[in-house]
Every structure is written in structure tokens, then in C-alpha cells.
Length: 251
Image: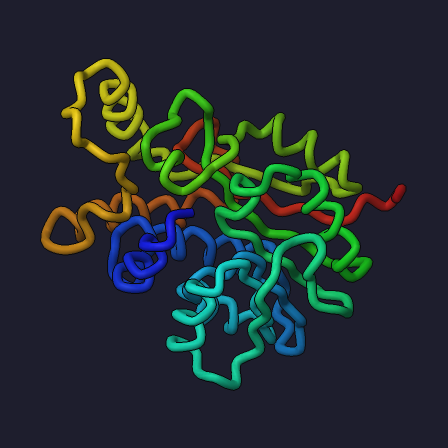
């Protein structure tokens, strides 16, 4: 991920429609799939600039892991110097001990050896622990956003299921999301491939646009509306994919 994007993320993730809508979906899924437990030990891998951690703290005691020193500095600025944050990558730098929940929100697509990362997460999970993750969906939606963010791939349910299984994890539940906005987003991204680009047009991240005004409020409302459906129903398409997995009892 380009270093300048961390500053942009820290500046926008509290009010940009995409970050807010995704958090609303994640919260609904966590409430559906995690029983109440104040002593739950949680690890947020790829915690970035910390925008999801206040939400996760409602579900347990959170430890953060982030590979980028720039992102980690912004995360410390948000959460304070005493919050338990670790710099490192998965799987080699996962903090010791077992965790009841590991979260990885838009992380796995950045990692060349996704199965190796999942093996490390599997080893860090308690026997009854769960992994909750999100990834971008469908390779045909590949855009400049993926390039700038150094993505390795976009996912389908079958692809994710195969990687989880190879790592000793079982998919408990999954759903595509950001489905209501899927048609216009897909249309724009497909058009971007065929329309001529200015010679000086550098690739841009989607989070560098929007984030304020009436359009931002409308997009957030549309995206967030899916929180009433996604935790209970597996939607067949969407811009992103959310999943809950657990250790395979046979491993």
C-alpha cells in the first residue's frame, strides 16, 4: 500500500461513506456470530491506522498488529501510547498466546502467500476461536484502486474457501456485501478499462475521492442498509466479501 494512503486513511476513515458503511456491516456480523463475552481476547491483524479498533473493543480486549511503521504511528496517535500495538507481519510476527477472535479486514489480499498467513492465524486461534475477515471480491472488478493498494488478488467464495481449507480452517459463514452499489461500481470500473486515460493520470485510490457532503451521506445510508440483511443471509454478489471461519476439527 502506498505510504501516503495511510495519512489519507487516518484523515477520512471516521466519516468516509465506505469506511463507515463497512464498519456497520462488520458490527452487525460480529453481533450475529459472537456471543457476549467481555473477557474475549482479540487480535486485529493489519490494524492500519486504527479506525476499526474502537468498534472491536465492544466485543473484547483488543491487541493490534500492523506491518507499516507509518500506519502504526497514526494508530498510536489515535489510540494513545499505552494501547497494545505490535509492528510486524503475519504469520511470523503474530503476538504469543491464543486468541478467541482474530480479525483481518481487507488484509489477506495484500499478502503473496495468503495460505501461509492463514496457517499462522490458525495457530494463534484458541480451539473454539473464530476468524472474521473481509476481502475485495471478483477479479473482473480490478481497478487502479487495487494497484495503488498493492493487492495481489480479488476473491470469490470458492477461492477463499480453498485457502482457508488449505490452512486448516473451515468456513462457517460468508456473504458478499456492498451489493446495492455493485451495479454502478462495476459499470464504472469496466468503463475505466476502455476509456482513454490522460498521459499524466496516475493511479488513484477510491478513498481519495468523496468523503463529505450529501453524496457521502446518501452512499453511507445505502451501503449501511445491508447491515439488516448480511448477517443472516448470504448475498450472491457484491464488491466485497465477509467471512467467519473456525479451526477445522480434523487438524
